[in-house]
Amino acid sequence: MQRLQRGIALALCALGLAGGAVPAAAADGHAGHGAGDIRAESARVRLADVALRDQHGRELRLAEALDGRIVVMGFVYTSCTTVCPVISAIMQRVQAQLGERVGRELGLLSISVDPLRDTPARLLEYSRTYRAGPGWRWLTGEVAAVDETLRGLGVWSADFASHPPTLLVGDARSGQWTRYYGFTDPAVLLARIEALAAARKHAGHAHMAGRTVQEQRP
Image (cartoon, rainbow, N blue to C red):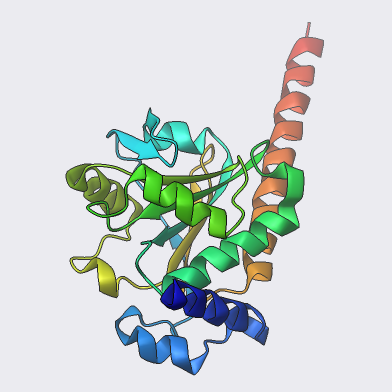
């Protein structure tokens, strides 16, 4: 418990620094994560069609978990006491900023990279530390299924304990995804979410305008 509390304290310190700077203790504690490498890139993802389980033990596919929403995805494991708590705390901040939109038009998704130990029950307990609401799902599953899922998302690592801190933000409907490495400032993620939401709204208006023109033609 002390190690987890220390990790959460580091997470709060990380989120209190401007520009997503990394606290030295976290960087030293998980040097293999490359936590100081803060960058973003466009990403192409494949949604693996394999059975996973959420924190309540319900079986579902990744596409079902995304449910056509704009989504923020994080990749963690519950025994991690330094970097992973920072990633989860970043997502907690995003959840707080988005409020009731989470679970309605937007979603949060945390996927365990250590499915051997991270059972649904363990994920449920862990999620409570971050006050995860109903719109924030936590996924695990059989090792082969989780590995295929992570490969499709471009975040698989042969050594889960050395996986780089990574977040994905994307629109499951349009297929536009951005992959963020390092301790990304929540404000950056929120700005990307709003850009995707605006693009959806614009596309919807353009579609409706096109239908109106077609209906008006003799």
